[in-house]
Length: 164
Picture 1 (cartoon, helix red, strand yellow):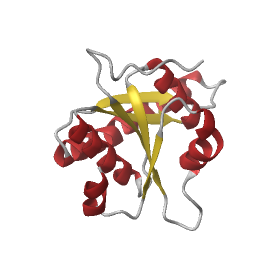
Picture 2 (cartoon, rainbow, N blue to C red; picture 1 turned 60 degrees about the horizontal axis):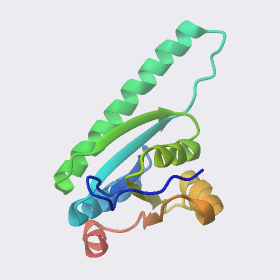
Picture 3 (cartoon, one colour; picture 1 turned 180 degrees about the vertical axis):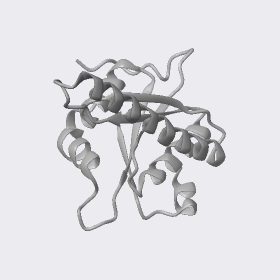
């Protein structure tokens, strides 16, 4: 069930959600979302989704690999948070989840009623817009709980500033 958005109610602020990964175009979504958050008095939420481990028989190995993945997620989130602070007057909320990226995006949106917009960056390569854009925007857009903004990965800072 989709929960109603509350970002327009007193005591709430619109949140722009961006999914963080290490794709070359990810910074375009962060730049857009951080600028939109600043320009509209909103907040920025950055989500990093770790792939689930598959080491059921090796619990010690799984724990070590999960800890290493969490450290890497914190490092990557930290780098993008620093960029967002530099690009806009925002202090991002950082979230780490484990699982399928598309499912975790939807879960977080359903849990946080202040998330009002999902910003994704489209890849510029021959392989298409990217797996997250394909799985969320192309397949689920019709019943997605919030609007999805797809930022072309080829846009410059100046071009993004003009539309954010």
